[in-house]
Length: 467
Ligand code: BGP
Image (tube, rainbow, N blue to C red; front, side, top):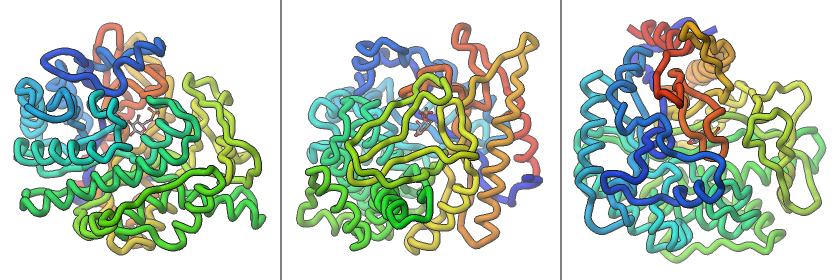
């Protein structure tokens, strides 16, 4: 399949602070929205995860050995501002300077996300993204980072606004665990778009050298059948899951088509969205100032029309077949399609979706700048053999097929310039814990020993084809 990569193509891996660092309560770090919740839930803890806080030098070297020249890292807001705002914590600031230095010593470019699902507890307790005061706190934090970490050239404001809002307010698998609270889900996304836009506008006003963008996880949506009902359900789902955020990010307003679908969903759920005067001006200013767009793609959605009440069952254990269709009143239901392979966590494996969504974004949003695929990967129950090897052929095959789709989109005119596999190393998964492994590097969580998987060697081989 993929024999070589284009010259200059960015070849990286992604991580997120809370999923790798551990060290959740030392050296002045404040709590996040997750700390108490995970203890109460009692399934798995985020400490020490893969102890990146203490082992970042080793991991960055392993990234180099795997042929990476870019690494997505997120800053934990509550490591810089333990209470979300106020005075910075010098130990947290120093830690990230050291991480970025380690990257640069290994010729790895850090791509830095400011918010990756980990609002400080103080911010979360005040309503998280639903409270507009927190938007200002985010911009304050962002501005501090832009100025302090001048060694960083590539920034992302917020990771996966949709996945966060869905987890928090629709499926209830992220704190505060509300179910089908449609008003909060849509409002949180609008407010996050504002936070992103304000941070981008500030970045440009201050003339910060470097580049900035945001990250959306997109699922291309396909009607299960050709029936008018399924097509309509797919249109609604696409508006709710993709268009609302893409419009807000790259048009600077929500198009009539999108709002027609969103309003249909809102009215059937007795939900509402508040857009204040001035909001759209803020979005419009940012919409033309993004330097790049980070697109995360894991899977697509097949959609069937649905008339009943909302509900779903989540597979957070990796026992194949234990999730149910997501049934969403007034929108549709997301179902499996016979013949389409799935992972142990019931995620579709559908590389065609990567091509389709890249093409769609590039064709529909002329303001969308250069795209990086900032996450894609396979959650798998990898096995470490006694000889220290991990033979993850399934992962290699998955990445290979998806990178092939990206290169095809590129050949067909899409400006896509890089790929970040999720993830560099096995790490903590928000709603699945530790048996869902994604890394190029295997972590023995008992000993914290690292082992390069077969996929890391494959990644390195492809990396070398660029020179
Ligand atoms: C994305 C997140 C990541 C990561 C990944 C895999 O939505 O940005 O943080 O966790 O998905 O998801 P999961 O861990 O649920 O399998």
